[in-house]
Image 1 (spheres, each protein chain N blue to C red):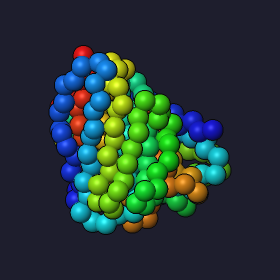
Image 2 (image 1 turned 90 degrees about the vertical axis):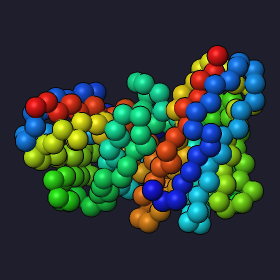
Image 3 (image 1 turned 180 degrees about the vertical axis):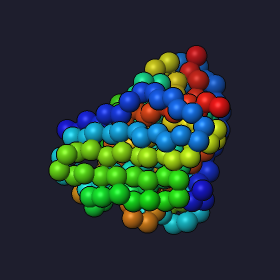
Length: 111
Length: 110
């Protein structure tokens, strides 16, 4: 499982509330990623990080921000949650041969 | 830009063979991944093809043709536990980012 945990695993929140999801890894991987998965869209990249304090946008970054102050933690923040951000969020790390390994996911419901 | 296409759903019988096709149009293409995802779970890595040809791993094989922008995942001796979604993803030479297709849901029937 590449030593990846995500917290919380489930969350229900209200529209307009800020939400932070945490991804934690124990194997010192340099690259970390946040995806969302929705029916009909597959996995889409939100943001990724290529080192401490080094992050970049993915294809669906609007409404999201990230931070990486330590190698092991990559945080995803929904600044003001909207119903369109109801989704399953997966964190991933890049291991050997460019292979990405995924965390267990966080199910977020925005009411 | 990038475009990755795979069928939405396939049904097969236990013990049979199923082939899941994936076509891609990716500038700067470097390789093609296949992941398996059971309902409610995270994707798990199956295979990575960089060179043309067939790579076999037990009951699963993956094929890549770079000139045709085409890959397939072959599942042999299907088991009920193979019922899952199979995700095709392309990686560019620069960037370490994956672009995923929509996934193919495979239903294995007794």
